[in-house]
Image 1 (tube, rainbow, N blue to C red):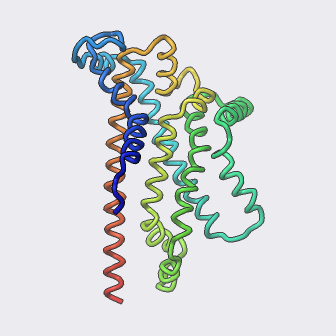
Image 2 (image 1 turned 90 degrees about the vertical axis):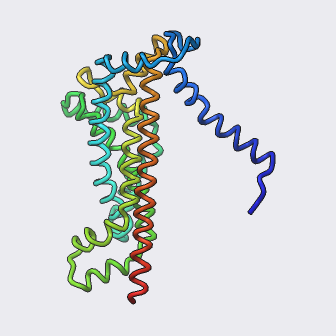
Length: 272
């Protein structure tokens, strides 16, 4: 093993400090007694109580959760289907166009995506609200799901599917019973990525949201224009905690799934 040099240790420390020190300061000042976020006046949790009584933030948070769950679920289904077609369908007429349409939103500026979706919704006469935000988030997040699932399908051993077909499974049963359980970690990762993108989106949501539906990032951005309040610090701390718990839980689930898959493969090898 290579020894840790002073240069590597310093670079690592500065890198982590640059990434996480602002978050640590935000969490600390969410427990500040003073209303001024730059002046420490003692430890207090009153701003969390104030946050729980702020109906505007709570309504925006509920809308954000609804949109994130719905859009990430739809995006996972569509993205998995698109990835399966790209990897398994081989060469077909229009493959290049289909592939380009899948990957285009990954490099398209969010302002262009949001504006084009806004014009589309206006053109078809669809009132802006939760539905339009869900459609917009599904449009760009399914591309990320497709990339994640495609990378897993490329390295997938197709002989397992062929064995299932030889044993009498239909193509759909082979996918449901063999392919989907094996690529499940990638599908779950795609769902979590789509959920995070939807939870964090501001630009596209600002184009497609209406007066009846305001997401939490839009609400926070509007409130910050008038100055950062301790309630926003408390809300950001809660979001950081939720994301941290989600990442840890997903890592544990993914690790357990990988270990179970390795055990099954070893058991199958011993049986053979």
